[in-house]
Image (cartoon, rainbow, N blue to C red; front, side, top):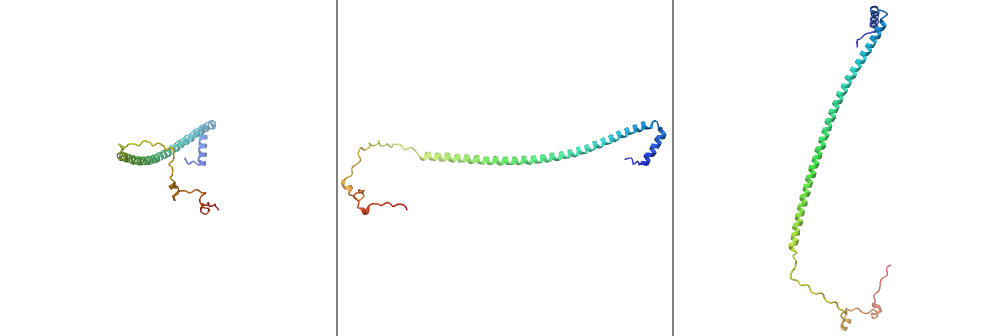
Amino acid sequence: MFDIGASEIFVIGVVALIVIGPERLPRVAKTLGNLFGRLQRYVSEVKSDINREIELDELRNLKTTMQDAARSIEQSVTSQINYIDSEVKQAGAQVQEQIESAQKQVESAQKQVESAVKPVTGIQLMPPMAPASEPPATSAGDASSPDAIPDASVVPHDKQPTIDKPD
């Protein structure tokens, strides 16, 4: 910092010994050492303050950059949400229109059905018939007809039905 070498320090020490004297030199050296220590602490504090300010400035720049990036992402997400919301609303409106159209078609079809199906008037229902107590008798001529079912005991053996057995 001051660019002082060892020989220069030796010369300063000899001059101080001659000017101050050997009795007061230790006290003056101690005071100068304390002042030099304070000066070093002060310089180191100033350096650390400067470094902190530089770091704070860098942090502020980083913070600003991050805030800008966050705003950009937020705007992007918001625009996407708005786009999706508008698409959903449009789809909902289309579905609502289709529902209303279908309801109108159903109402129209219902009116057509109601107008096509009119209650029939002037028809009288027949009273229920009394159940027959005896089944109708078959005549003797009907028994000899070819449609009549013959009794199994009367059918010849070669014409009796056979049942196939499964293999």
